[in-house]
Length: 216
Image (cartoon, rainbow, N blue to C red):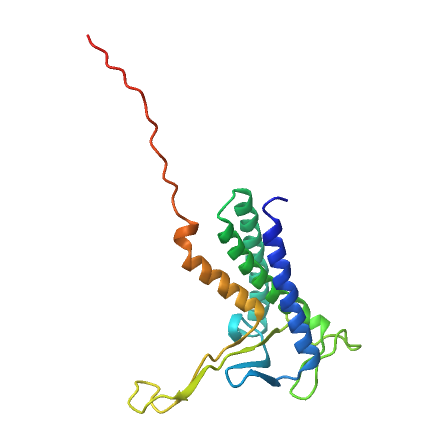
């Protein structure tokens, strides 16, 4: 198990925090409900999506099923890659970054695979129930991903002379996301930031040979 301990602890920690937060949100908040944590800059805002990270959508029911199956296939591939990297003793930081990506992917897979079976529908007026007597709001692989982290840091209007969006409102940062999305983003960002350190080539010193001068 040497080499696996830290990646496994990191993965389990991210999954535990991600799922605890999502369960609390589902059972204690209605859709659209929000709590302001840091004024208008950091808000816990409950929303759900049928698609990818940061609330992006993907193609109806068939697209939802395809995306869920793709996620599962992708996380199996990442898991195998992580095992391979640990066995081959890749850079420890790189392994932990990949573990973050793996954990984030797993967190959202749990939502999309099982939440439709575990919870009743969250609405604008009613909170969800865990293991409802009438069954969940959807079937296997058709659950919705729970999002709650919202950072509308900068709000304003584009000036009238601004191309395309002149006079319109703008908001940064608009997407609502979750801890699993954050783990994926941080993992990818750290890999890009430290790629030279992670993938630096080893300089192999040329072997020195004793040369003999043979005189005729």
